[in-house]
Amino acid sequence: MNICGKIVTLRAPELADIPDLHRWSNDPEIWRMLGGWHFPFSSRSTEDWVRGRKDGNLTDHVFCIDTPEEGLIGTANLVNIDWKNKNAYHGMMIGKANLRGKGYALDTVHAIMKYAFMELGLHRLDGDMIAYNHRSIKFYIDKCGWQHEGIRRDWFFREGQHHDKVVVGVTREDYVSHVAKNKYWD
Figure: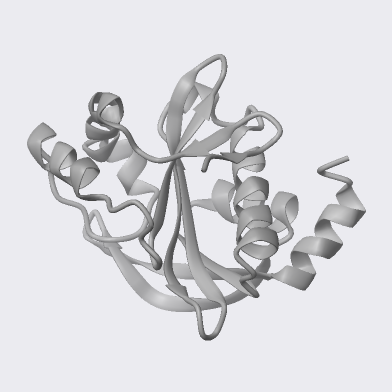
């Protein structure tokens, strides 16, 4: 099942996506802005990752962000789904730099929230960003209705320095209120 926003479609990764996914997985400008630990990836390891994705995985959902005009433009996820406590972690990456700020990310996050809260029945989503990624922090809080929930000091190590992790979250109630206020789906 694909997940449809107003302009994006979230779908499973396919073998045809490997060249773009491989390029983005090795782009230092992309990974400088994202959390986690990153190593160089071979095209073979990217292919193995795509082939290894199991349909129907109950705790990790990884999506390719697709648009009618541009095709594959990035990835989004709902991972570490905790079905008992009804929460999950969300992350997103727009790989094509020229498409950032065009509304695709906004539609992706709204589609993810709608799917998580209204289809899966989750109660909250968590996310985090490296503190110098001001654009993403502002985007999630100002445009998507997420709340700033805290700082983890000196969490990320980049270019010889430690940087804080900014922790954000959104509940189903936050989402419903945000959508009603902004009339996103109208």
